[in-house]
Image 1 (cartoon, one colour):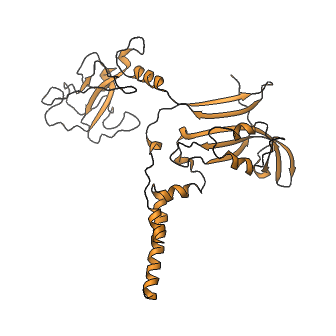
Image 2 (cartoon, chains in turn green, red):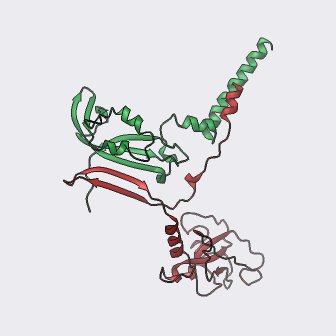
Image 3 (cartoon, rainbow over the protein chains, first blue to last red):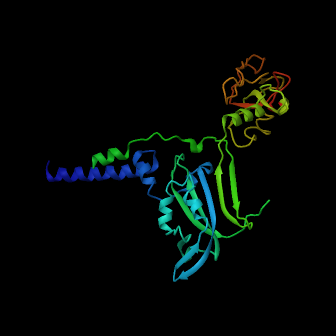
Length: 146
Length: 168
């Protein structure tokens, strides 16, 4: 193969890879499924039925610059949830201390001293974004008892 | 590089249940401690078991089991429409002034709805209406009728009958 032919071949191959990336993002392909796992959850693509939503109260213990230490007495219920396949990831991310029952968050994420830690989990049976999850904090509003 | 391209376009057969109709319920469980403070909340879908599916089918379809929803309100009929531009939608008001329920663009006097006297539930978790035979030439629809849609309606004591609305 001449150098010129090699260049043409390389450009065609690169073009095919770029097309392949675009195609796999918009079609049901093996590579598309792989790529989907890397990005955030697109909740519009997940059926309500395939979302498990859990939440617990968290309370600010201490603040150190932008690092907030919070009590999370019931965090183990989230970590041990049967649908939460990737719970270990969140445990590590929030630096959950199982003995002290505390977690660490950026203070920017905290709406108030007492807040609700929400975790939305995509069930394994979902055809879109299976096992992925997201967490976010909202103001604490007590759920009324009937 | 070509191997990578080939890998990228390998299709995968994913069950497209996300867009199909799924009958489900969502349960929310809230746990309180001894002092009445909320400590945990979870919302997750339920799973309808076979017994539940059978129960729902028996309530919805006119299969003739005693001691349930009044038979007159149960589903058991097939109706035809010849409405131009008919298209199924979320509400009944598609095609025509009153929608499928009353306007079928089939000349009055034609009985284009047939009611099944006993919907079959022989196959578990399945309801079968019919089979029903529609005849042209004035029996059910006039000759030359172009059927544009089919609707499933409540049962009727009189069969055949004129419109879906008449079944109720």
